[in-house]
Image (tube, rainbow, N blue to C red; front, top):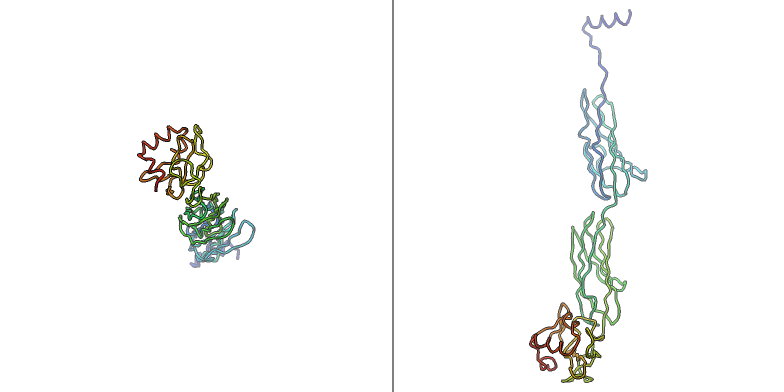
Length: 310
């Protein structure tokens, strides 16, 4: 019997002819751009089967260096992975329909270097030797949460502090021997990226020692005369470092500043406390002649007794 006649006979007898299966349409999703160590979410939920249903999924991922890695769930419709390299990842899903047909689709994940954390360091840059000073590190996260803050002084490890989240502030106290020192704060995030900032700290010996003994210039004694001469603009050389290194009096006859560290209590912001009043370093550095010193003391209500007597 000829084939055409067979088909007619089958149709007359009511015997059905199976139609060909249509394979599924795989959909891995849209391409993505992320930073390294960020979670990449994969979703093949857009895959369909025109004449049936999807019965299976299988994901495979190729890293930029050519190695194969597995997502969190290889056979799930939705899954995720974390790229640890920069470059292009190829994420392919193979979907299978109820007739066993399989089709694939690939999305491309472009991975860029993550933003590192940042840190700023603050504290006094000039201090008295032996004095305890506070330094503060303010850390901020980049692409990953913070992990630790490490303190170093002159390259030696001093403190190791746990950190977390998007930001962290930590303060530590240090004292220094006379000379120049380096304070460093290092912040590290959970992926190992780091940032650091350092500052140079100069520790100076107190002018006039412990404030006892003589050698004073100007009336009242008890201090140390420090070479600022009449008509010289600004502070004399011995008073250019430290916060409030003890300007007490300018002797209008000798043209000398007299300093007494024991009497001048150092306060924040570069001020010298004299009696109940204070003079800022900016005001001191503006003094250029004896009359201006007298005028400043008059405006501040500071008497010679305040300046030279305890």
